[in-house]
Image (cartoon, rainbow over all chains, first blue to last red; front, side, top):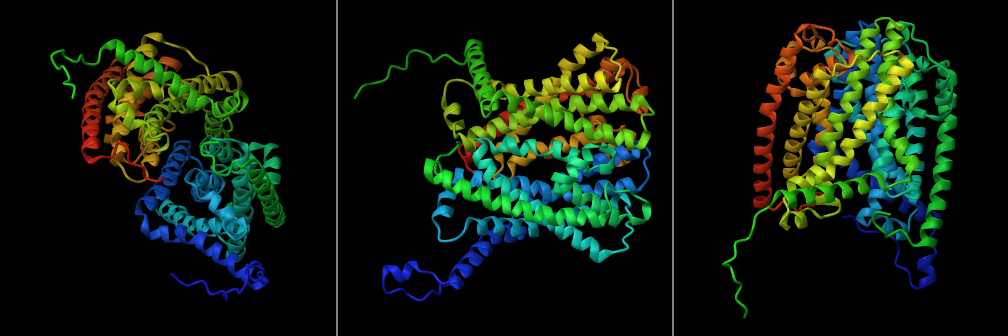
Length: 291
Length: 290
């Protein structure tokens, strides 16, 4: 374990006055520290690898076979595989971001986070970065296996834009997870049920298994609120550009929406966290399990 | 030091004791299942998931067929509705036993009481089963009212198929509950994984013929395949598209009864063995930190 390299203070006042550099360094350490278990978990928990690839892959396979039974055009198989990969990120956001503070409280870690000399946003950022790295491997596996097994062909004319849109989708997606992390704590005592509630309904609204345009006017609401739906719609347009797939909006517009969503969700997460901290300290509920 | 008088035989578990455990566990299960929120949010939770799951399939169907082939839509709706029971029973049994072990940490106390764990476990998970039947009814209702699904119930098939099929699914759930008690990590994921695998091979939302040939024996061996097929015939008056739909009703019921008759004794024996093993391995009060 590396030693903490701050200069020893000679009195209490000096110990309490941190330079900006020290604050930044401490928070960066917190980000790395919280991301570490998720990244290292890639190799330490093979069972995670199995379940996080196997479960989305099962769902992908079921929907692929439905399209096959309906004799759908081949690009729909690709839509499902891509949707399945994005589902892995959504599951990560719901279970390992949104519900995480709730689990942390149950296990007694939350009070430690609040009392440690760092910002809680650093913890959330660490969770997001670690989760993103961990889930990327799963999503790539789902895409790789699904594409090989079901013979999906991609038609990518702008690979850099595709990569950019993917990264831009992840910012509001994990920002939403950060926001929900506070809200789940505020809303009630059963994060499990709330997380469950954010699965099938979101898969439906986000157009995970079909083009988003198919849900008609509701797609407009989705485009305005759900980064998963906007990102997936843009990614499909870019990954299957030769198939004539029509998105709800042009990719350029969806990129702007994703950028705006990224800012909004991160700011909202910051505000929700501040409110949560205030409420938690005032009501003293940080250490209460199952509440 | 007092000497305990052992001349009076200790009576074993009676049917009345089992019934009392079962009844108490039902109340407990319902409280755990429903008390986490206000009734409105609970109702939304109960309704939203199954309807959204069915909604995904309906939109996929509409996008590709533009509403043609209504028989396939009926096939999808009934399969999607009934699958709530499979997942509800399996997840209910497994999560009941895991929650009592790891979250509420009550399993060891239940095991050491004179009551048997088995009736408790059945009662504890019943709330989820009831909720899953509500989901079935709602999905079918939406299908009938909004999508023109024509139900032509044939109770001669439907009633026995439901009873036998639900027993088979309970058998699978009991097996899973015992199995998950042995696991140190990821036990919570197993019902989802197994139910997901069965979903794939049981012809729930697509005909079995579409599956690769290597999976056909698994599909035909699963009681869920025959339960879904018999239930479709009992609800819709016709079977699934594909080979299985061409079989006579009597043969479908025979396969359902036969596969269930094999599943239940195997599941009960396995559960007994898993419980003995759990005691020996000292995992009845294990906390995996998950």
